[in-house]
Image 1 (cartoon, each protein chain N blue to C red):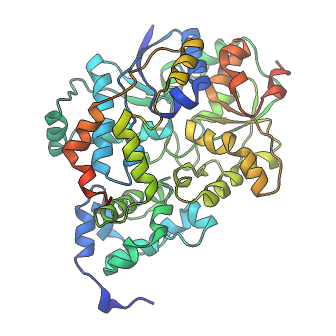
Image 2: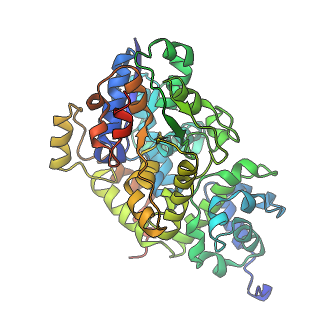
Image 3: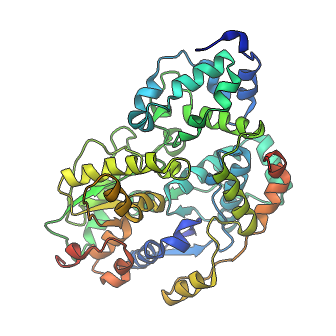
Length: 163
Length: 284
């Protein structure tokens, strides 16, 4: 049950400031995104139209604390079908980015961030892999890409991740 | 000789070396030269949900590495392709460009970002590829899986027909196999939600594996290492969960093309496939 007395009307304005969130206000609620969504087809818990609608209404806590937000596979089927030309998957991603800033960050993402900070790639090239590559005649690659940590420092990404 | 910068990303050099091997051997056969981006990092996609700007800066740095060589970049993973393409369009924005430059990165030349398969389609072309097929692969039914980010979002890729794609079917078909026509071409493998909800991801993988089975496919063709993680690496898990048997080989497109070009199965890395494609090798 949605109680508009709990609405935070500033919520939508915060989302449109996030990278990719610009299109949010153009939504007129037709639900083409949900109809095109392969996740929605298999799992009713995920509903992009509902997430966008709740965001426009200002139901900040409902949206940000919902584990279903993270079920978007970012496949962009919705984006292709939106009659308003909204990059729907990007809007959902903008809401995820904002959720992270508000302290909601799935554990898996934190793990990936740390892995990337350590070596610059999700899978570190360990000695076993390097030897296998050599045996297969595949070229050498840098083991660690330190520029990635430089990027993390500039965007201060670790400051917004709850410990 | 055509020359490109090769961007491998995270998964290919560690978990899909057979894809890389087949790609390099096919390229050699077709007179394509690769310059490796040895300092290439993760494309940035895994961090997009956490912070889009950070992921775009990572992608832009990789685009910059190729741009500094003055070469168009070729990728092997769908999500890397979309991420690098996104960064490239972002580099046109003043504010983003400033941060990029502040990090000491440069982007001197406008370059193209394309998946290897798209590059084959556009720069070599179907007719030219048909001419170099030495060993047509007969009596095989092959199901092409496009994956999401090869074509979507279409505002980044502007290639093929996003609602009814055909380029991979054409590329598969030219090797002599029957490219199975089917309705569910656009289905997502579920890879992006694997870390969040494994059950849902396996359900998504099961959907397309079932389509392949119902169409009596001898193998599925993938062009993305993450789709292969879902359809091949996790196939036994899907079988156990949904009480079914697929035993469906999943080949990367360059592996199939390599066989058509007359390369030995080993040169196509087929012994590294987890679901053994013996049925295909025996028909060579």
